[in-house]
Image (cartoon, rainbow, N blue to C red; front, side, top):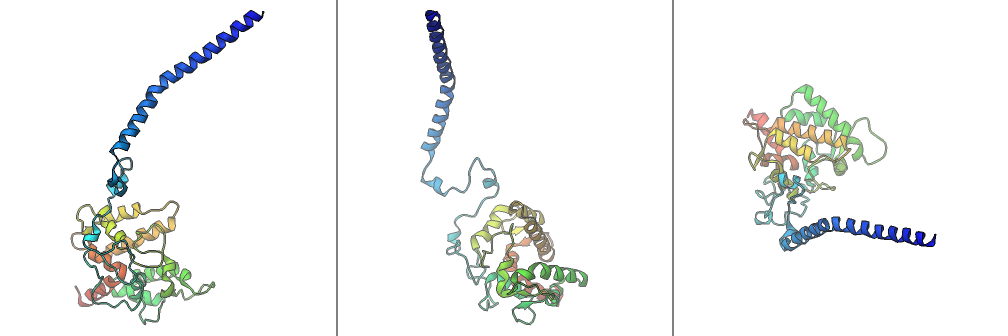
Length: 276
């Protein structure tokens, strides 16, 4: 009886060893192959990889390339500009208009402040839209929508106001998600993000965009679950395209830069007054 028990256990042990050896023999070549591939990649890596802007396993990084060598045309393009909308073609920003000590985001809204008191009321927003060429009905709708959405975050207190004022001092609080990132959280202008808009999405002309390219940009900037940000982004860029497109259906880089610092509104208002 003892002999049988010993034989059974010896057989079980041998079988276990054999199974383990077989499993190791089958999987060992695959493991060796994987290690060889990893080592080969490691050998190919160089110091240049630390500055790579595209990853072959992330195709989106190839489809949406970022700008390079921006320093050749613009000093410190990664430095946020508080007062000027600087790009590679306009290193000192827009010539002519004074920033009056306002951030670039504040300058964007200041056109609609008709009496320069730092507060934009719906009737002032309406006058601004009318001045750049929108008709009466659309101006009313846009003015009400703009102030309704943007008023409360900028208020100095907790209680809402039925007059829907937008306080320019606090306009940075209206920055929404799924945007371009050209404004930082305090309303400064980020030249590198502005330039990357074109390197990523301007496929037909590096200095212009079509509506489809603008739409693709809003799709590329979408943040998960940010429905309000999606709608605001798509709505604002659609409005911009309507007022700024040329006869060939493009919007220029210079016009887009003017949108960010508000100088475009002055230009459109002047063109509308003179019938251009």
